[in-house]
Image (cartoon, rainbow, N blue to C red):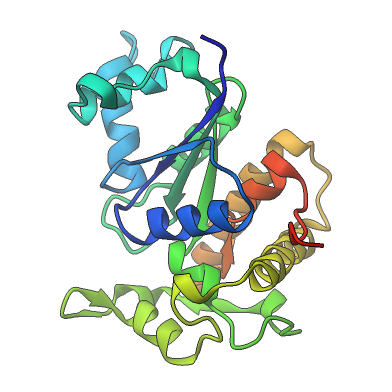
Length: 251
């Protein structure tokens, strides 16, 4: 069978799946299979190490078949089974979650080093601080968004199982429900976060393959020195990586 699909591995079962199903529908993309991992990136790293570590305790990334790994981890059966031969590209989307007790910059760097090519093992995109960053702005042409940050203490505060950060974003965001996002708004969000990525990395010399590793290093340095994280959603940017900038299909 000819490879024809893209495998999108996302962290959560709700927001991420709803967000990207909606974006793909907006742009007429129908060859993406979305699979929820159902826990955070640090648990993902630990499971890889448990299943693929060599005698020195290092993950043998060269032998990882991610679809096979997911079949076993998620107990997929029958028609739900994933087959590496079906996919042209593999995309992984997880949150930075620096407030998590298992937060570990070294694990993130290792994952970004080894998941850097969507056509090979897969390419990892990390949301800072989490997926809700896609709507963390009060305007789609906000000139201050490039400098926007969130303090670690805000991420640590929770009530009724909802973080303070999510409540703050919901209270002032110019984005309503995911279903209300139009193609014009989606294009604006892609531009907003793409511009911020370029702004944050403009002082660095790096290859395309190192882009997201450099961003992660910069975020960890910011967190370590100022207890702040720049707000940027790189999961949206995988659409630019995969498809280039997409204009309204009706144009």
